[in-house]
Amino acid sequence: MFESAELGQKISKAVYDKEVPELREALLDAQLDLRQSGKFQVIILIGGVDGAGKSETVKILNEWMDPRFIETNAMSVTTEEELAHPPMWRFWRALPPKGKLGIFFGSWYTEPIIDRVYGRTKGADLDRAMERVIRFEKMLFDEGALILKFWLHLSKDVQKKRLKKLENDPETRWRVTDIEWAHFKLYDKFRKVSERALLHTSVAESPWIIVEGTDPRYRYLTIGKTILDALRERIGEGARSAAPSPAPELPPLEEKSPLKSLDFSQSVTKEDYDKDLEKYQRKLNLFVRSPKFKKISAILVFEGSDAAGKGGGIRRITGALDPRSYRIIPVAAPTEDEKAHPYLWRFWRHVPRNGNFTIFDRSWYGRVLVERVEDFCSESDWMRAYAEINDFEEQLAQSGAVLFKFWLSITKAEQLKRFKEREVTAFKRFKITEEDWRNRKKWNDYELAVNEMIGRTSTETAPWTLVEANDKFHARLKILKQICARLEAAI
Image (cartoon, rainbow, N blue to C red; front, side, top):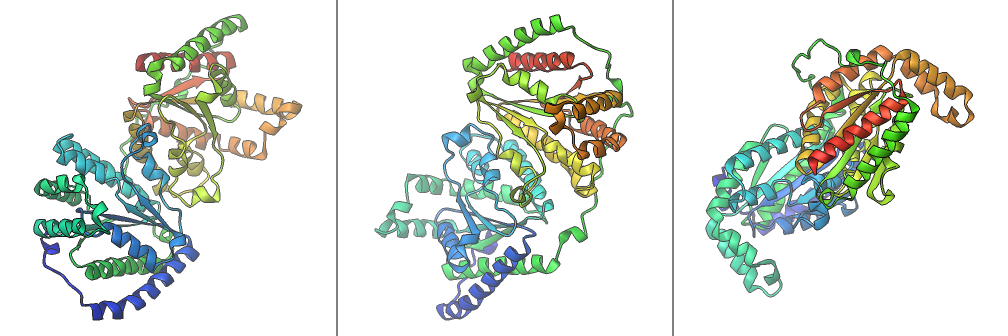
């Protein structure tokens, strides 16, 4: 795979000096077109062997284009804060919005490759990591991103000469440390592992471009021209939404409806409710104060019918917690900034570090509920979202998060009763809007979407808990009992 990048490619200074001004002007024009269209973002990965000119290339790109609209991310050693979150958290937070370029100097490939080279993982672990990368990049592509991945390569002899040259120059000596020489001693293994990773992840949506790093002029022109051509091609395509990719085929679900199986007759007396509420709130408080809880986190998702009592259920949870240990994330229609990123971006930003509670009042399931029913996204978008959401939640669980997903369900008659009560109760009027009445008219459409959502996203690591919420006392206790039971098992 790397043989084509060991041919000694060079460009003369005369040719370089002639071509660079025109290339820079064209890149600036293309960057302006990108900003004005605002239809997609560009994600540029700069990877490769030590000494191949990665940092110099990043500097040149910032010099040739308008750096105000480039977000450069040097993803070096993972910080303590990043270690307390899922591995992909720091990359999601750094994704550029539509209309901008994001350069990643070090990326989601770095750690899996290094871990495999140093024997901390096995080949199967690397393959699984690369499969996850493929799914991640496919999702970015489907959300409109242009992904350009450059691997800067040097032969073993050239890399050795390059490192020695850098080490002998007082101005660049600091760039060659024991780490670079340790990596060089493992050159053959790095080459083998990197080739395996690149072959696995060089796909149509985001292919790898191998660039010989020996001659800087050749390197800069090759990468600059590739970026320019890709930008021109994508901008020339116009709106990709005009020709959406076909919806993915999904396996059939069982015909039995989860919502139809609920028993809405369940109820709890006020006396039993008061007694059990205190009991389970006390248990929850003790679990969260346990030293073992610091090694995990709790992520609670509340979805449900309008007026089903999500707010009341959430208040009974937070009533047992120290305000410093939890956050409530109310999810409404996305802001302009959120629309400029992939739809999961705004949720990744709020993933808690270990030792904390985060409660989502509505969540990423809006993609397969509201956006589906109201035609805010295409069928292809919401159908692929099931797999994307499952992958997202699996990453959270693998990093130590305990996921609780509650669907609060009420009957259509009970909803009508609560709507009318809200209309005549002064301090509850804000809770009822025209949108609530409009959604009620689509009751059957939402019921179909909910049943499919539960069937496709209730997994072993992130199961749905269906809560019969006609009786508020029963619903609140069922939620608290489920949280206590799963936290007890986790810690």
